[in-house]
Amino acid sequence: MKMTPQQFLDWESKCITLLAMSGAGKTTLSNKLPKDKWFHYSGDYRIGTKYLEEPILDNIKQQAMGVPFLRDLLKSDSIYICSNITVENLSPVSSFLGKIGDPGKGGLSLDEFKRRQALHHQAEVAAMKDVPDFIHKAEDIYGYRHFINDAGGSVCELDCPEVIEALAEHTLIVYIKIPPTLEQTIIERAKKDPKPLYYRPEFVDEKLAQFMAERGYQSTDQIAPDDFVSWVFPELFRARVPRYEAIAAQYGYTLDADEVAGIQSEDDFIQMIAQAIARQSH
Image 1 (tube, one colour):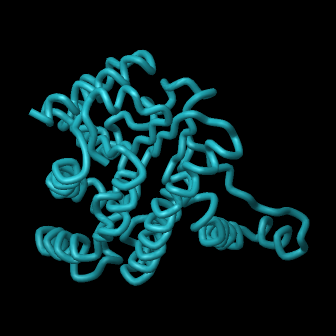
Image 2: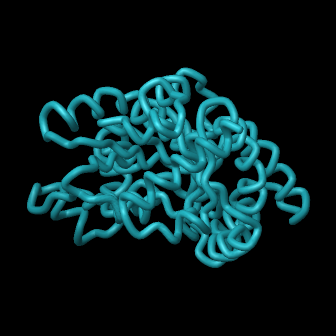
């Protein structure tokens, strides 16, 4: 969806997809927009509450069954388990993805890790394909004037052109670019608090082989689960940037994360996008 700055300003029902690495401020920005006018669609929330709901609960129940007290209560239907996923708390999705490594330390075998990654890939594709329907639902059912798609950081990894084409057809794609000053902060934060993420299969195979060769590991069971996640994040960051930039160049527009952090109002947001359109048009 390409338009002039004036066409964007005149657009009565604005539909925008935010693309960026985790930590760039997509969700923070979405939450600054008036909640009575903007429908906030979180890709990760949709994944966790719709497409991975059952696998997430199965994973939690499997862990609980390892505790005799909880196992007896579950088997007798004395308790039930549900995950409390919110837009701000997506930990159950992250916990389901898990980390490669020593099973004794909570790590996953490579086969199980790849199985979960594949399920997440399918779920993210489905969640992004739901965006056009939710745009109509947001307006027709709930009466929202505008729509913001807070897409997951791994959308650029899906290698599924029809997803990006559908988003570009129904929304204005805005890529939030992380400047060098913020890049190292995000990398250091991720290394200190390593969280499970989605990786392309080819990326996992290449980087895992490199990591194991450097450390002298013969089996993934020897890996401390946090170690690979911490080591690979800078590699992932650098691999994703050109993918985001290619999407923005072909389908959308780019904002600087430092500028986005300064947005205080809906008008700030709209004017900043109009300026980005003008800048890229020239």
